[in-house]
Length: 391
Image (cartoon, rainbow, N blue to C red; front, side, top):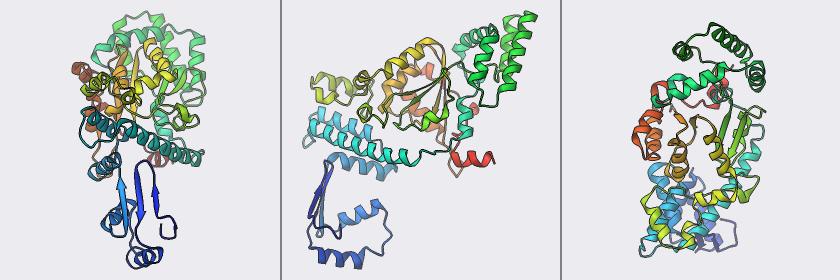
C-alpha cells in the first residue's frame, strides 16, 4: 500500500481508496504505524479510524462476516450468505440484489480454493495421526449403539459367525497394516468355538458386549469428506472395503467444489422457492449435488446396511442440515458418535456439537437415542498429542 502508485483497489467485496499522496502517506506510516505490532484485523480497524487518509467501502456481506468474527471469533460464510439471502427475499430496503450477492459468494469461493490449494500443496508430506487412524478403523462397540438398533447388533453377530475361512482371510488382508492380525485370528477361533458349541443367541449377544474387539471390525468404512482437501484420503487402507466420498468436491477439480447452503428444513427456504427466481436457489447444495454422482453413491451406501456415524471436525451446523438430516434419521443409522475438542483449560465443546446435531433432527426421540452420550465419547486426537503418545 505504501509504495503502490495505485490510488484505488477493489474487488467484489470491498474497495480501498488512498486520499493522500505517497510522500505524506509514507511519512504517516513511518511515524505512526511501522512500530506497531498489529494483527490483520487490528490494521483494518486502524484504517477505518483514519478516514481522512484512506477510504474503505465494504459490502453488506463482508460487514456481516467481519461482525461474526468480532463477536464469535469465527465465521460460517455459508450461513451468513443464507441469512442475507433470506433478508433479500423479505424485500428489506437497501439490501444487495441476489445476483450481486451470488457474485460475492463466488468470489469468496475462488479465493477459498486458492488458499486451500496452497495449504494442500504445502502439506503433501502430511503426517498421519496414528491415534486418529486407529479410531476410524476401530471395532463397533455395543455401548455406542442405540436401544432401538439392538436387533441390528444381533443380526451382525450372527452374520459374522457365519464367516468361512475366505471371509476371515479377506477381513485380515483389509486390516493387514493395522496391528490386528493376531486378534482377527483369535476372533476367527472364537467364532469356530461358538459354532461348535451351538450356544443360543442370548449367550452370543451377552458375549459380544464384552468381547467385540476385532470380532466386530466393520466390513466397510466410508469417510464422508466435507473440506475439499485430500488429507482424509491418507487415513484409509488401500482396500476395496474402504471408501472416501468427497461430497462437496475436490480442489483438483475446481468446478466440482460445492459452496453454498443446504438447509431445506428452514422455514425461509420455502419462501425462497416461492419467489420463482433461480438466482435465489443458485447456491443450494441439494441441486448442486445433482451435478455429480457423489450424493447418489452416499444414498446407495447408507441404504445397503446398518451404519454408525463418527463425527470428526464437523460442527454439524445448519449449512449442511439437509444432508445431515438424511443421515441422522435414516432407518439404518444405529448411532451418532461425536468426537469433541478439549481445550487447554479442560473444557470441551461436546455440548455445542450435540446442540448442533439436535437441530438436524425432526424426531427428537431418535436424537436422544442415537447420539452417544459423553461417557462413551472422547476428544478428537490432535496430531501433536498423538505424536507424543506414540513416542
